[in-house]
Image 1: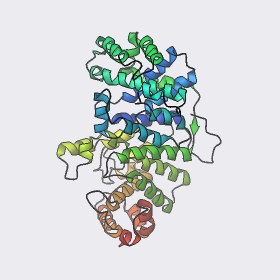
Image 2: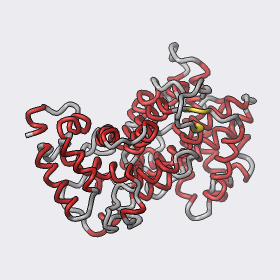
Image 3: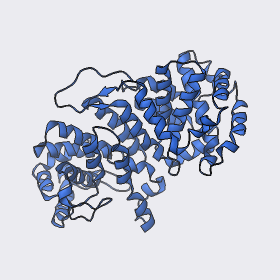
Image 4: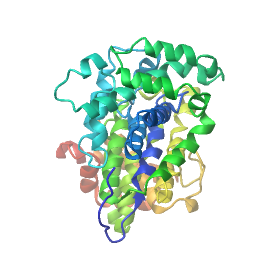
Length: 425
């Protein structure tokens, strides 16, 4: 990651690595019960880099590559097959999705090509004339330790991992030359001889390793525009999880900003609110696909699961220095002024205006957006429903009043491609 140059007045400044490491936690949520796969892959890749004599800069890059290697995965079904089958026939799809997500984002573009090839067998990869040898090496190392983690996955929960390390190492060595470069297999075998290599993959050790990697290099400061671009990448991952919610987060983000501008919110808070809107549903990555995609009414148990998502969002974002307000605004989008919302049951006095704006934007955008099982509501019908919620004390009536006063503009922000005649009538 390169250092961003220059600052803008009143801009939000945060360490890009801290943002990436925190947001990577949302990728690991896709595993449902196993929420550290990417981090473990990053740790193993970084440790193998020492045996390969790589520089500290490349060690950091490999760690970041491991952390983000599955950025193309949002489906729990896809994650299941990737960790349960050693060489799943459909594994290349998420590699291409990950490449497309990162290739145009300047600060993470160096990770795009290795991610594209991180499930390509070595005997094929080494023959690709258009792939830089260094990219091939990085991609193949991630493939190797990724498969190591898949083999180790059954043993993390019961504390028996050290009893199975020799069989894991032997299994990976069986694929030398065909799947993995011999040089990388040798480095892995040297690194993994010690118990410490495996013990640092335990949950209690992972956070310490993450903190160490943050301190290895100077902070990589990034600002509003790049933060919004990164947030948009992650919102796309969330929205791609279900055909029912495609582009929802982007619409919520745009509508939140449009409402905030009309209500006199400062420019910096409008930028921050856009980011909160993009990231408000990060926690949904932990919700199983079958619940999120269910068009019928949810059972009590299913509702309890989906109601955890805004707290998961809070847990991810609150660890980013400079995101304290963004974390709250994003996490409070199911809180109600009457205190009957979730997950915190906050009263109106504890909710900033920005949080109340995002709540209105979330509900309104969901109602007017087309879904596979229904056409979105016309704006005036959705507005009538919002006014009913305001009368019941479930949303802020002041925000709904601004929505009503500027309905055509707000509709275009929420659903920019909706036909004008259907949008308002």
